[in-house]
Image 1: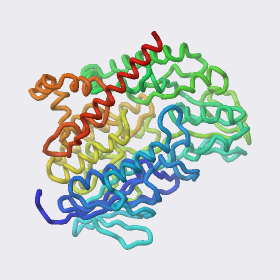
Image 2: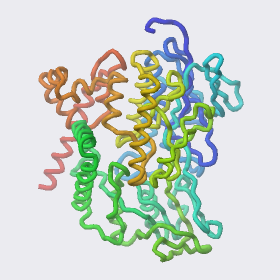
Image 3: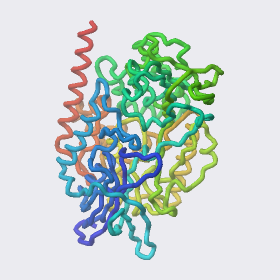
Image 4: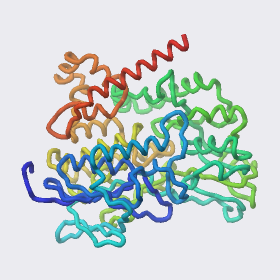
Amino acid sequence: MDGAHEKTTVAVVGLGKALLESRSIHLRPSYTGVATLTGTVSVQIAGGLGITAVKNLIEEGFEVTGFDKSSYYGGLWHFTEDKETLSILEYTPIHCSAGDVERYIESYVEHFQLAPHFRLNSIVTHISEIEETGKWKIDIEGQPSQYFDKVVMATGIHVKATAFRLEGQDDFAGEVMHSQRFKKATDYAGKRVVVTGMGNTSADIANELVGVASKVYISHSRGAHVLPRDLKGVPATSVLTHRLIRLQGTIDWLFPRLRDFISGRVLRNITKAVFSDLDPSWGLDSAPPATVTNPIINDELIPNLRSGKLTSVPGIRRILDGETIELSDGSTVAADAAICCVGYENNYDVLDRRVDPMRHANAAWEAARGSRGRPLPRLYQNVFSLDRPDSLAFLGCTWFATGALAVADITSMCVAQVWRGRSRLPPAHTMERWMDGQAAYITGLARRGTVVPATVNMREWLVWADETAGMGVERHVGAWTGAASWAFWWRERRLYKMIDAGVFTSAVWRLFPGEKRKAWDGARAEVVRLNEKHQANLERYKRGHA
């Protein structure tokens, strides 16, 4: 299609990780446009997911216009006191604040000159396919409908607050609320608060309430691995490297449960080394495998439990009266508010039912305790529609343990290359068979603990994405027996080591030139800079603890 002048329209619709509404979701077309090669795109976004899609589609020749319900680009990184809108807490300890991330997203829009491609304060109400023409009709509140060749849904995994109801909830005099509605600890000054769940959200909220609420309980029915934000002077997550991902992939293939044993032992040792022995009464010991449920990254949770500022109690059984909550062990606590951290789910209500990937029932998934009533999307590689793979794709349905914006960048590169015609999807029956295997994989995880429905096998997915987007990382670093890998190691041993065993940075995905996605001239310098900074921080820590 190179050199063609036929215009194709693509609609990219997505919230990214932005305004997530618990009652109704108005998807905002984020990127719509007329492209000389791939088509017009309408994207509904509010955060980084859709913005990266717009940038990568424009880069491949699409003329894109973004529609967004909100008046800003930051998505959930834009703090708002609107309790019907998900946003990150206003203050984040140690690492960059929500404001820092929002400013980064805004600078990204400015640097790549994306602003002219956005129409903010717009709401997409419905998306349907016109069978006679194959075009997509985008209905926009208060505006004429528009028509596109392709649609990208960039709504993310936090679109809809998971519904819940506690037994006896109507008898409670205080507030029973989803964690989405929590904005400021000062709203609960002097109150007795029960925070339910044992995850990163519940830990952050409970710690925010310490010293403000008169009493804070964290109520949970399972344990958790708790890690510090920093370990030996560098982020604890820096243990993740390309080499480790390959090793994990090999272990998963040969001895699936061995990884659980090894990772569990490593995480417990880290927790003990940093926080010393845990009190069994906190109920943290029965942690699900890290391959299923994320560890909690928090410096304050265990110190607050140890000091008594935060009290660990069993899960909630029911509410008895206006202030009494009965726990699963029969004991009771008096409370003025219950903040329930029960999670979020994908939602594509604006899509025509005929192409909604959530419309399929899966009895095995629904029966698994870790599914928690959330639907499971059926998508090839958790990206492409099985109904219309040539014109409908999704961002935010792929999840593994790394930055969401990096995954969105890689995913949208894949979409752009497939729709541009540089990469091909397999036949329909092969894509269906992949999804059947993915459903079995995620259901197996859900039988062992609460899992994000968008979870994929990290190693397998990255291998597919590397080839589809044309990133070249696998060929140069991942294939130990390949000629290109050995040649790169021979010529660039220091850089090879940084990529293979150093900082797991998204700059690597733009390092190697190729015939597909565009490389970044500054990628090499960024990889080196981050690794040198990482090493300097390690050395500084060693000197300080010598």
